[in-house]
Length: 499
Image 1: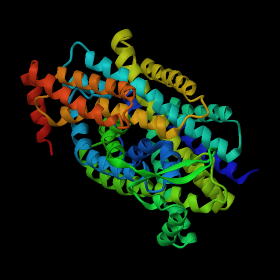
Image 2 (image 1 turned 120 degrees about the vertical axis):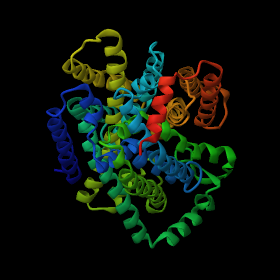
Image 3 (image 1 turned 60 degrees about the vertical axis):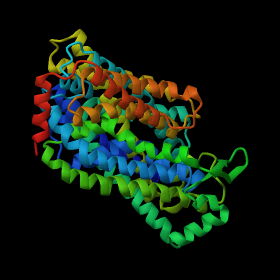
Image 4 (image 1 turned 180 degrees about the vertical axis):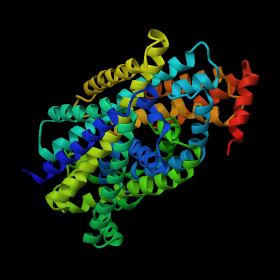
């Protein structure tokens, strides 16, 4: 049997086994959605990183670096993400963990907003849950596309068959074990992703003769590949191979750096902050996540993409296949199989989280709130599992187009969450005067801006105007309307004093 296939099968059996084990540990909706808030710092750290990066880290980002070297998206997006993630862990993680426990033990983001502002109309909850479902469909679709490209590039099977196989695998253990299955598998997957990118980049640099030789060879192809301020065109089908395309410009750099703003509003990452067993473990988790789970993978992905430029005799038709092709080119089939399993890990670790957060929105914020207020915990868990299946099928339909780009789908969903929820989270946690009307306005303005901004034809990433307009809306509507009640202000002050 093919060595790579054997490695894949063994890896998948381990993931399914974890799902079966955690199935027996999942008895309540809190267990299914947040794992009963029992995650230690190591699991929280790697789980947050793994659910964050997804298939774009090993497929989309190396593909961007392969197509453009240091220019365009690749370097600047990595810088923006590194800064955003560090700020998120430093300031948001601890405060959110404390606040969600104080606000009637909120287990979902919409529930937190409702409890934080005492919104008896439930408008905040409904609007938040609706945007979560809308943007997660695109995000989940990106993961399924990445999985299909992995199976297609590794085993040379039909794209649509690969899409179905990948979806079945991911849904299986998410369906069974919920948040605990997702978090413990993410711990393994996050470590595997970091190791794959670290070893591949170091081994590749060693074989080629180090950074100096890599940049010499890139420069000999086109100097724009080693210029962080230069754009590069790549179109293998059209015969355009690494041609200089002028300066990136301020709009391009700002758009790439703005990816860092997205961290403050990603529900699947914020869920890890809410699930850590104590706010006192956040500091340790931050150190682990930023060093091992963030910096190494991000810059390893850039190096892998650039190594691909100088390693292949024939340019790749699809730049997003660069990691998959490079490991098969560089390594023994058994080692390649292990490293390619990391791509599957990256994909699974995010899609499972997205399915789970979407499922929790349907279960907690729609089903129990409006249809079955007296539903038992067992009924809610099973409705959550059925929701996973429904959402996966819709995402599968969105991913059916074989020309779909992983990075494009992720870019849109990332902007959607960042602009919709990022400002609302930050103001809720750090501005005492934030009101319920301000939060509703901010969420609506941010989400709608992301939907409508592409119609303007502007090259500016929709995250930027969405985040700015949302922040302005929160401030304006909080100041002109009725301010927060005395009860809300006392709770805010109490949370702010927790050390």
